[in-house]
Image 1: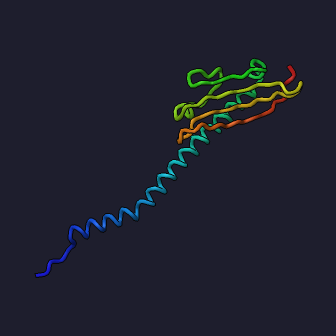
Image 2 (image 1 turned 90 degrees about the vertical axis):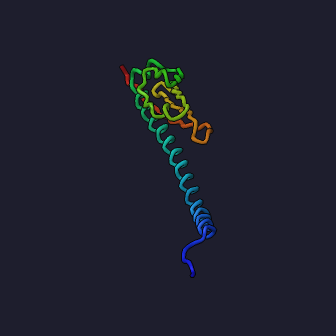
Image 3 (image 1 turned 180 degrees about the vertical axis):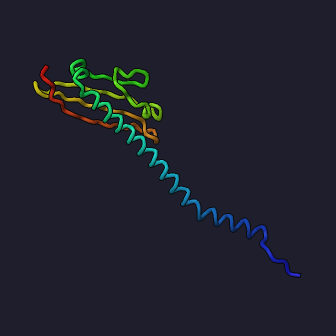
Length: 135
């Protein structure tokens, strides 16, 4: 009498081959997720810099802080409304520099240092010039 079916060795071999063929797919998916998380952090930092620079262009901030460098930490926002997404996802700090470049031009730079998902420090700088209002 001849039995039909698979032996245990055939089943183990089939699972091994299936595992080998699926491992590149899993690796590509994991790498894609890592890149996506890194890009989300970059976008959060960029949006934070844009938000801060638009607030820094206000007349009151410019004239109170002209010639100063302000450092924003997670626990102290120094009067700026800072989105907390970046602080909650990674170690980061923000520096805002106000300089008078000319009598009619004020330079504002926002620099955000944050830790990427790979542990390396990343930096984003955003610069803008403002013509002060005559008041």
